[in-house]
Length: 375
Image 1 (cartoon, rainbow, N blue to C red):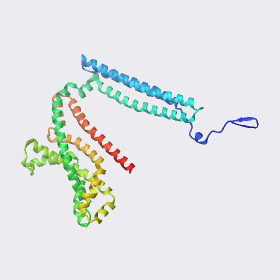
Image 2 (cartoon, rainbow, N blue to C red):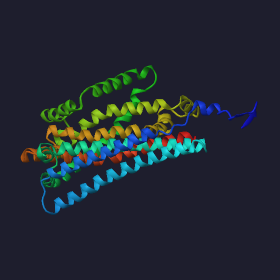
Image 3 (cartoon, helix red, strand yellow):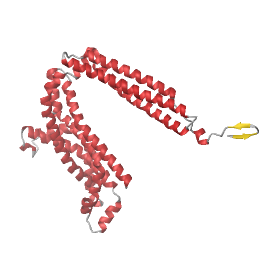
């Protein structure tokens, strides 16, 4: 403080503090806490309604009661704890303003973080509540149609057989697509005037099969090749013939998509790499094989995995031509039982396969980002 003319003057507040006032967000934290508790209540009511709609008795009913009660309690405790932390941090920020403005700002920011935690968790709880209300609708008729445990249990042996066929088609098609897509990509960027016919054919193929719906291609290849006795497929019989026809249809479709992924990777390699390789005496084919393609493939692994996730799911389209994969088996079981639970089980089986591939893609993207940042 300074004394001037007998008056005591308070030190001026720094400009940075005037421009960025401290916010405790106490009112918002209280509202968020109340909203979180309300969401917890809605979730508990939804879970109770779902419990009442269950068609199980005895020990199974007790297990469901305990599990749903623990879930409702967990939602309530988590939302209440996060909301309370937001309020506590806000109050602490208000108390620290006269003493330590920096600590007050830190506490206010922490209160904001806790309110966002409550918001995100509340949305998750509302989704859970919606699912519980949806499945318990019409006195549990909706739940019975989608989650009939007896129907799912009856379908499980057939599910494993069908899913194994899906996996075999996916793995074989993926291997062939990698080769065919690379051939198309190299043809797509073939240099010079003499390469124009090759480039024209590659572009025509890619445009055609990217524009054609996959299900139409499957129909034309599988049914048409069988009706026309197209060699060499006419030498095959039964399930083996159908397997290779279906795989060929998927390769034709996804080869066009993967070719464009390859092309993007090949064209992302700086021209100096090609120039250096050619100056060392390598031919164009050797340059592409030993210099450009290895670098390009490392860059395009994440988008390739995304295409393979799509390929894995599109194996379900093969059910329309009679392949007894998992979706076809689920449909047959559903028609016999008049229940959609086997179809839901088939969908879950695809998700179980897809999620690890998606997480692997995320990990590879993050690793490449770290490598670029480190370089």
